[in-house]
Length: 156
Image (cartoon, rainbow, N blue to C red):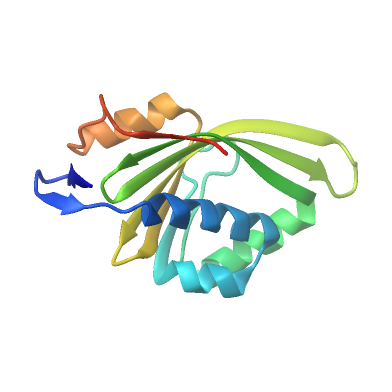
C-alpha cells in the first residue's frame, strides 16, 4: 500500500511498522534488552519530556537500561493495553492504557497516554510520550504530517 510520506513522497508502508511498534511495547513491558536492541537503532531517542512527573530525555541502549532501573525500583508489573494504533508513514502512534503495580506498596496504578514511534530503515529511532492522543496529533500536525485521515488499526 502506498501512503504519503511526511514530505509528500509516496512510499510503500507495510504492516511491519505497526508490528514493529507492537513488538517494542511487548519488549518494554518485559524489559527484554535483547529484543529492544534488535528493534531499536543504537542511538534511539527516548523522549519523556512531555510527561507530567519527572520529564526527561535519554538516548541509546544505555539510556533505556537506566530508565528500566528507575522503573523497576518503583514498579513490579507493567502492562500496556493498546486502544488504537494510527500509522502516518514512518510514524506510528499507539494510544494505550498502562497498568502498573507499585513494588513496595502493591498499589495498582492506571495511566492513559500515547506513544509516537518514529521508524527509519526498519528500526525504531525515536520514542515520544504524550499525555493524550490529541497532544501527539497536534505535534505531528505542527511538523507537517497530515493527521486528519491517518489509517487506524484496531487494538487486538
